[in-house]
Length: 359
Image (cartoon, rainbow, N blue to C red; front, side):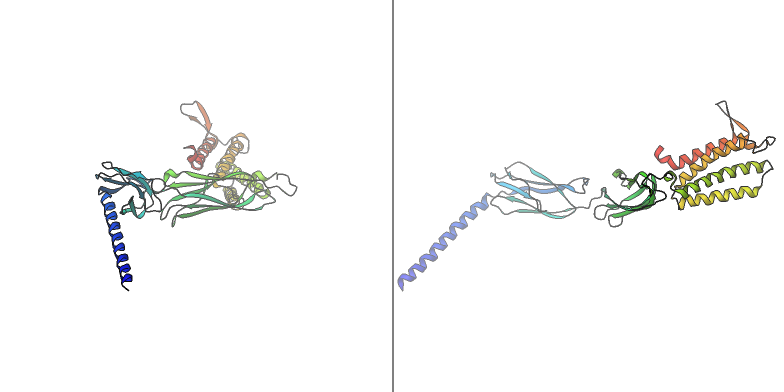
């Protein structure tokens, strides 16, 4: 009984002795941990293009120890180890997404020093990513054209607002502003044979530029030969074009004859009504651009001028104002008034329809 009691007391004494040694070791280790004289952070002056902020983490101590240390950035990443020597200001720069973080300076053999800070939202807009989603339809046997649905999906950062235009071969088709950092723009039409380009132009932020999608329509008729009417959009569209041009020329000729007193104002109204009707058919059925129709009107006007002032369709004895020549100052040229009108109309159409490209 007595020997067993002695063994128990010896075990307790040994455990107490070991605990005392461990306490002394820990105390000495704690005494080697430096006291930080500087421990702070600094957020950059601006947000980077990738939507992140540069944050500088700094630390310094003056104690006569040089332990190994490293930064834990608080976002799942760590910095490289370094020798934490006294008297030097150690800094580490890391990029952070907006949010709240708790970084820590981990010194070998010492408790970590934690630093909690807030990274603000990025006030500089980022450029959205642009993806095109094209869907091809069937070919039109008569015209050789093909229906395409092209959707552009723009995706930005969380909460970001941006605006963009979608253009088909230079003509505006769709536009909008993002909702919840996502914007979809699309165009659906019957594209004529040949090469085409759909462009997304990011208008805000203005520095983002644009993205393009190029494709080619290469349909054929039943004989697997290129259709001979594809240049005007098909057989019916070619008929509409011919009738539209004839209507414009007829309107000009009947106007000149009416001014001379040998024509009917009723005829003028009929030709103008026909021209408007065929223009509507070209725009709706054949999907012709308004600018193309206006340019065709300008070309038809030149043909009308040639008929009115170059033939006897208007009585020669009728000295109509339309064919009188006007002296252009500074050039020495005399040009018929009707030709001047056509030139001015053509210039205005080109300026309106293609002014953006010219500038």
